[in-house]
Image: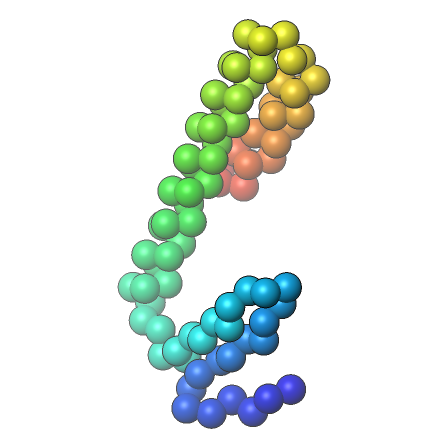
Length: 80
């Protein structure tokens, strides 16, 4: 483990991902904005699964529809 200096957290690279640094003094407004952004992304993902279900059903891909419905159920409960 590395020491934490200057209030910065440094995460090591994993599988080629870039090193991320985070300030320890993030404001509550920034955190709230990030949470709202994550929720909006999940809602957009839910819309995409709904479109995937309709497309799979119209194309006769009923197994795909069932899988998408299961994922949609999980995502919907996560947002609620």
